[in-house]
Length: 311
Length: 318
Image (cartoon, rainbow over all chains, first blue to last red; front, side):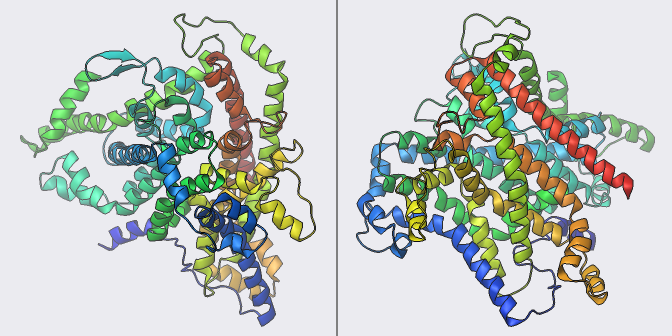
């Protein structure tokens, strides 16, 4: 089993705790102090705006502006209220936006994991015809940013036939489908799984073959159970963009029934709401992701680290 | 296509041992293996074709037509007219200029800041995890949320100007002043994305063997010499990755602009993607938007080719 453990270690070796040895000599006291001060200053620069956002979401606008001049801008003091949060739910169908975003990102990530890992399995383990060409195409598409093709794709999805339950109509606009289907297959995710599968010893599937397992069963019961770290990485790296999608839903959604939270905040702001309410909206859509991040910090960080190591 | 998918689907559902003689079974197994492989690859292949390859090809086709987003009339071929209009449109030149300025500033500054911070927290000193986590928080915060937050902080009487006033600086109307708006967006963008590249630099730093540093300090190398002779060469592939990803992401600047300034004031913050969305979505001129997208595509291609050329050159010299 050591080979598999080594394979598992391949993604996920780098973590935020800094396991690597401290290669620097112990510094003199003053140098360490200066470095600590720099670190604290940076922590203030990167952390305080978020604290400001959360704290302001509990204050009326008058108090937010009155507090700006001092440290109380970053402290939950004074006339605290939940009115801003109530306002968010009153002015827009916020619960619907939230539900839409959750549905879209969960389905995109879930289907993506299946489709991409299956494709990678066929490339890594089986005699897929044209494998080299396919790999080259996938690598080439990695450099093309979505924004390049967003506008032609907007026209394109508007030409596609859409089955609305009873009949085919033209165009996918203003549906969940148009926000999910184009983002299921992901070249980066396929490549990630492909690399990971390649690191799992082939003897395992040969043994399963001898035992009479078919290819699909090998994929499901031998390879995927060993691919936990790759699944985590792919899930995180596809969840963040799905949750944060903005440009695409801005163009393809018109109804509140399919609008995700990120486009909703734009729309919310246009209703001339108070800053406190905008901060409340921003806080509610940020806290779940921050909580996920804090809970799965190692997985998050190693995902991003591995995305870089591959380059 | 459908018949392959169908037969492969049944093959995949009924996995079982191959029967028959060994040789015959092996050959049959290979044929079946191909069919199953194609079936497993097919969903991804169809989706990539439909939502990656075709849209890329469409960019190059639609750019030479007068196609409209919603129109009963199909678009017709109009040659280079879109590009002629584009190159005589001062808004396009403003968007190209802003996109390039944004990229040229962001790429070195953001990667240098991220490297500096990575070096700062690349140690096992107590509390390092805490600092890394804080620096990383803006990355997991959506750029839309960040833009809203900074839009608030950049108000004329907002947090930033109030804090600046404390140290005797009178801040400008950041987003309302054409001289400052793009700068304000640059600062905010670096704040948001720096943590991502800090982590990538850190993972690169951790691939450099500690023995190299020990050897260097035994030879009496100063910290700066260690950086120049050990760290910097050791980060070569990380560097390439970071430069390419920051550059491509920077070319795609859109969300911040759309939330904070809508391209203004006086086109001071409009970008290629913002203009593409403006013409292709708001004005429904798909053909014209495709022409802008093509310019964007060519920029990405040039950068990637230059980057490839530079790294190849270095490898050859070694």
